[in-house]
Image 1 (cartoon, rainbow, N blue to C red):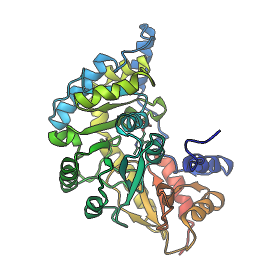
Image 2 (cartoon, protein in one colour):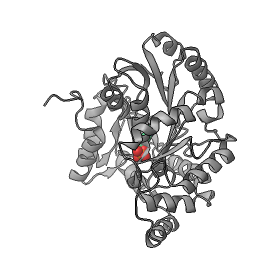
Image 3 (cartoon, rainbow, N blue to C red):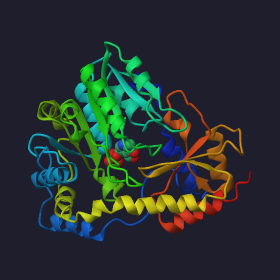
Length: 380
Ligand SMILES: Cc1ncc(COP(=O)(O)O)c(C=O)c1O
């Protein structure tokens, strides 16, 4: 059979997680919390099941959930989103993004992405017949080189994908970033896919710059979210996309014949639980404490952090102690030091290697302490 994705192999997350199991290593590689989610939210889902809500949900998502999401967006971002026409619940954030690409890409369209990049974007674009135009973020600040973005636009450019807070670097958009983005999108009549799955995981008093706050930009955007990140249940694979009605109409044509609808009891459970605003309002502080704990534990190691202001992740340079490639270094960490991380080059199409590893701090204190004990054995 002719492969539709000939260049795609096993993802680095699978490789590192398998190595972690094989070597009984502590896993700070893949991004998922190792602490329990809310028992109350589980109870809300259980209740929905016991109440008999176990059949297909509305194809756009349980209406109460869409209403609650619209209320939340109004409360947090002072933006009116119509729950009937502008929100679609999806089986996870990745699916929400994939469907946005499928909605807009015609064969030969160019899509600009920034590297390092979350691993699903490139295969999503290629699979839909698009051409990936990668632009590297400035190293080591990981800021966006806006002049390079302008220079990369051609008559074939169809869309830009942005991600804030950013996986893998933890960088968050400034207002200046979003205004630059808006100018480019509007001037060249592009579409925007905005991956905002880490909207609440933002630190140091920074504010999340959602595209939804900018009406002209939002008019050309698909904004994607994940309940998994917000409620510490990545295994539930539930998310949603917010887009203006005209775009959402086309998006729903794709969704209707793909997933059609999502897990009913979980949607009802989350809708009922969403009245607990503190559940999402407090997580920024909770994760910031974890980030700071890891920082503190690693401060006497030769690893040099590249500051993160958001997401589950912080990156560290190891170039003061090794010239090895980041993949070789990460493998050595698993096999000899008992800790799994992700080599940053895995997030670049051409394997750009700045000798950086990504650590996930969405872990219990014990896990972070045990991980740090492994890394403290590294010597200059
Ligand atoms: C940047 C980014 N976007 C999207 C996703 C996917 O979210 P979900 O698990 O809801 O599909 C992730 C998950 O790791 C992510 O890091």
